[in-house]
Length: 433
Ligand SMILES: *Cc1c(COP(=O)(O)O)cnc(C)c1O
Image: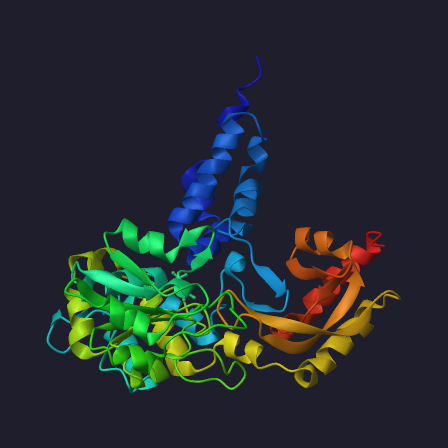
């Protein structure tokens, strides 16, 4: 009777002593290597692979990325694209995340050996970036920042808000529903297109606790429209929560209509709330900047603990603010001139009769500045390329417009241009038409 092949399955300790697995363990950690080995052994036990192939199968497993998230090369020209993770992190932020991955003094003072203010480095970086703020707080995302502000500063009373600012922020989430689900009582004033200061003044009674101003970051009402300014609302004498959305901390001439935290605070907002992963170009986070007493009150609210961020977010946010090299900022400021050489090189490199360089408008995206076109360039390909580029490896996400597949280099680091060219050539060689 032949020997049971399962007896030939190599033992775990023998495999782990193999130099290839020792090297892998240095890189990926022993737990990961061990589980890859055990997985391969279990395949062999089930007869799915031969015992001789266990080592190779385990090594193959270790080559695989540790998560199911696949990198995407963003050729859409949309700078802050929610479906693909909003802001790409800067090199400094990526390094900061790696540095913070182990034990770190996120909430610990090495000098005294005692507990310290959590994430103080990130908070100081925010205050340095926005001198008009007396204090800062970081929570999970923009929605959390707004929720915490409304729960804290309205103190169970009504929050007045213009009817024209009751926005839906994507995937069916509506700010009013979000706030009301947590017990915030919203009182709408004015109309969809026009709200006057008098509408707010008329609504003020004993039951008003705060006023909310929301930047309509993803749509625009043109024509017969008006809404009171931050300074007018601040003059009403109630805590003013101003949701700036985009995370712009100071004015940016490229997007002149986009409000920024510093300006709104200077105009009298009590607190400004914003996202960390839109125009700020950092990790997902909710930024709160404002009067020190109001921010402290928010920090002490019981729900703040449920909204807090982890050390990785704090590390990435601080690095984003301090290093000033967020990719979002450079992508936003590209022009046809700055993109021309790379775009023409790409068109030449793919050597395709149907390809041409065309003028296109990039977009800020879900991060703000609705309707603002960012003039740029793209390589136009036959429309059929789009699906195949998206399904390729690497995944190149292009934009389909006017029956063409547009490959826009605005949001692609220059060092990836060659990969984009290779991806297009691969589609062409596979019979792209
Ligand atoms: C994006 C946005 C939000 C939501 O922020 P998240 O970080 O996505 O939670 C809230 N308000 C405004 C005005 C926004 O633009």
